[in-house]
Length: 105
Image (cartoon, rainbow, N blue to C red):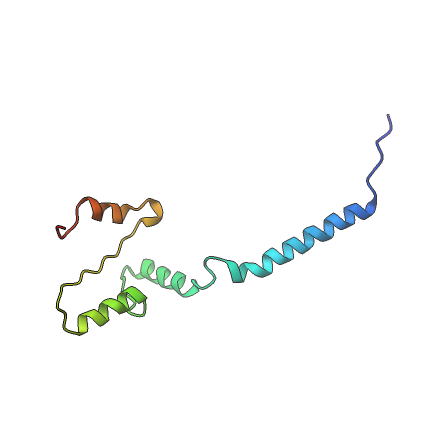
């Protein structure tokens, strides 16, 4: 039995070129569109937290900076800043807050 006719070599070449362009584009834009392209400092900070066992708040973080600014001046009402963890796992912190708020509504 004879093998069937092979596709023209031009189609194989075109497919190879298109795949190479796709891979180059995916690699070059991953630094721009990656969800963690600006997280290099956070990764290093997290590693130092794990190695030292000491966690410190970064006051340059926007919610913490807002809390520090609120703490400096006089207020007419009490302010409670809330920070939750485990949100990626299914709203663990916010669900606990809703189920048992520290301040009654």
